[in-house]
Length: 421
Image 1 (cartoon, rainbow, N blue to C red):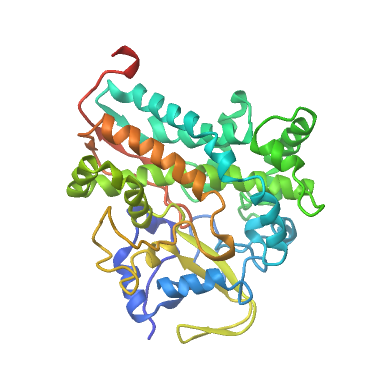
Image 2 (tube, one colour):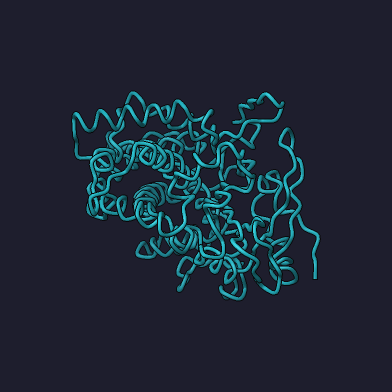
């Protein structure tokens, strides 16, 4: 049974997760053919299958032999055919066994021990950022606090000099925010069509920086992730320069924007449910499970695309080889078949099998680092400013990929800076 729905238009997500549309699709048309219409200056595409039930989303993500990241990459819009071979160098856009080779090299340096070495610095940064707004009594959380927090944490991890850190935000806004009029910097190609911000032509400055940084780390090694990546060797293999550049891109964009989106989104979820906010203040031991519920409620990544390797069937829908198949995390996270009473926000929910960090071979490699940052920040903000409350509606990013929050006005009783107490 086909259901008319629009889960493609990025403007839909500026209003939040379209829960009612997702629910109708899960109930009546869980693998739904979605037209890919023209949006602004961006041309129409061929359309795709929108996957909304948890079990089907997990199947797609866990079965690269049927649903490939490599064939058409992982963004809804088709890349320029001339760019595809370049885009396929990124680990995110690989299938086994090539994906496994890169994952082993990177996992060997992206270890728990290395990440946890930065925990004291992350906690200190969270304390400083909250300190800077504590006496004001109000703030715009993303603008004043959380846009900077993950950038500096990531830069510390990578070993990026402090003078270069502002560039990370510029790159992120260019790549992630291109659908949003506040961030879009539209560049037209010779054919008059917009140039994809993820194309090689639009990323030259980032890749040149990555090459330069890696070369400097090889000459002057330090105890940071970029040094480890530039020199790591597993089974006699190292990352090639193009692979290293693409992994730098993945870390800078995904590593920054996942936390940047999750932090204010989680605050919206918590403050929209004052009973759960009070419960958490009374029971701080629930913070880890509360973070999982915030991630379920507000997935920082809204969708990922795969391409059918061969003719297949998913939820009784016949999918042809070459069709685009897009999973929607916000739909899967509220699937009644997996989550009892999914519209109830419960900071003690267990189990909580949300897919906000993905699933299968591409499950987020940086999820541990993301959780560390979320835990440190919420621990500092919530108990320092216990009466924090919404002072207005959130302003969300116009995007069908990232669940960003551009503005989140908050009020609270002013408290003294820790340094003056």
